[in-house]
Image (cartoon, rainbow over all chains, first blue to last red; front, side):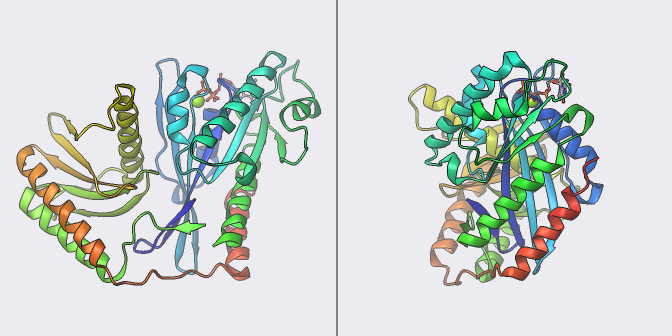
Length: 196
Length: 165
Ligand SMILES: Nc1nc2c(ncn2[C@@H]2O[C@H](COP(=O)(O)OP(=O)(O)OP(=O)(O)O)[C@@H](O)[C@H]2O)c(=O)[nH]1
Ligand SMILES: [Mg+2]
């Protein structure tokens, strides 16, 4: 649920980047940090292992600007994708308003994508949240891999209903990074306007 | 849905802010914050003589996550949570206590303050803030998310996230 702070005049949203280990979640946040002008972003915080794997989360606050005297703020988080960090993933999902799932195009990660998506649904259920009710966008990253699976095939496996927006990306080259963020932000604000 | 983590505005906010001033004066703390468990800053104050604080967004996020992680650790041992969260470095310390089920009160202090005083006055402030919140007669302001608000925010989104290279 989005939160409002009447004394600070802020509307706050929490967006979480989810997905299997090494799919490029942290890379997305780093690229967003590079893309966004100084006045619209805060410091990026990364809690990572020595070899740069996410241990707890990455965090980046963004300031969209002001409408009717209220600032709209997005807090972006990534979860650690490695399977054994599930308790950390669960904690990061607390109070989530929108999710961007970062999938991997590599053939040998297809199963990891599907398992991570299932794990996302399970962890959301623990907060009594249903992924189908949440603003949700899928980014399929690493489209540059020579053996990248066709986007349609990955889509078939992850979303047979075809209802979820899918966006191909090469996050490392800053391609397809802002699109999913824009899409999920739109959905999040739309949902707020409908339910407030 | 849109809800405040804490109903803090109008006169209630002024009163809580006065309690913060009082806490900082009496305990010699540097900063006091209310953060919610989602990691957002709800309210904050700083002592007149305190230097500029570090990024409050980073601080709130790390405190909320740290607090949640500590509860998860306690639960591994069948505990509901740990009673208090104290952090002490050579120069700076931090004392964290639950304010409501969704928010924490945090007092940051330096070596010129005594931990005992910080704890004592933070606990006292929590009781007082709770009393102020309970006695509040302020009505929650309303927000209008009309078409104009929607189109304005959408164009902000396009402006900020629009051009991906
Ligand atoms: N080929 C290719 N590699 C990429 C791309 N995006 C990220 N990578 C690489 O993939 C590796 C993992 O990226 P991270 O962003 O750390 O992945 P993560 O999802 O945060 O991983 P965890 O924190 O372990 O969950 C790094 O070596 C990146 O450089 C891409 O678009 N194409
Ligand atoms: Mg990472």
